[in-house]
Length: 261
Ligand SMILES: Nc1nc2c(ncn2[C@@H]2O[C@H](COP(=O)(O)OP(=O)(O)OP(=O)(O)O)[C@@H](O)[C@H]2O)c(=O)[nH]1
Ligand SMILES: [Mg+2]
Image 1 (cartoon, rainbow, N blue to C red):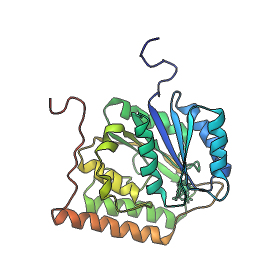
Image 2: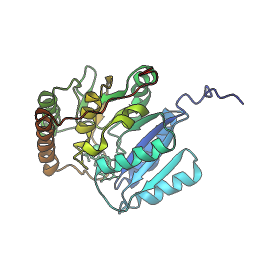
Image 3: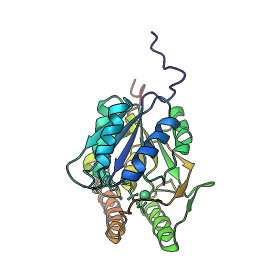
Image 4: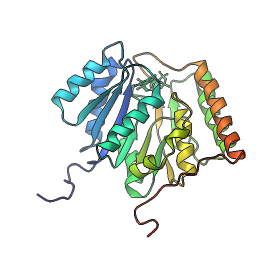
């Protein structure tokens, strides 16, 4: 045996964290597509006790496939909380690279290799971006487009951030980046989590890259988007800026191998 990674498993050490809430119809096919796209990777399903039995389907998948594991959570607490929990499980298990994505096919598994490529080079965080050249959105009405694009532009301007897509949830993280983030500072258990984590990573000195993705609207299952989510995003973005202006911004910095030598 050698310690080199097997050539047929180039993504050994990569964990895809997949939060699910009522994704019974999507889970099996999306899991298969994710594992096929990233040979050697592991999949962690984080289910918040979905009423439609998604958790039991995840258990069935895990029983027949050693690459799949399941984190069962007692109640629906929002996407951010599910990710924080899932990231901790994957980091504990030794993950080197961690991918976050939706289970409803909005984030096409075909993009996974292009998301991973900059990470395996020198990026600390890779964002699957709808708002960079080659990216886009399919099947969304004008309101949904405005909310999403407007949200990213607003957060980008207020917080002076570089990336164009701050609200998307298709991202790949280097282990060290997630370890450096000051999780106590995350205000949101919900969707604003996406903005907050990219903000914290940027302030911690992360090398952030965007790769284009075309986002597809979900075909089956129910949407969890609501007006309160939009309100929360506005408040949290302003709050982050306010804290910075008062000298109470984040201070954590990413430590890379070889730093401080
Ligand atoms: N574990 C967990 N997963 C969640 C929760 N809320 C949403 N999800 C999952 O997070 C992903 C994104 O949620 P979606 O409902 O697709 O939200 P969206 O993409 O903003 O909206 P639509 O695609 O329009 O429905 C999906 O895989 C959901 O199943 C939650 O509270 N807990
Ligand atoms: Mg969705």
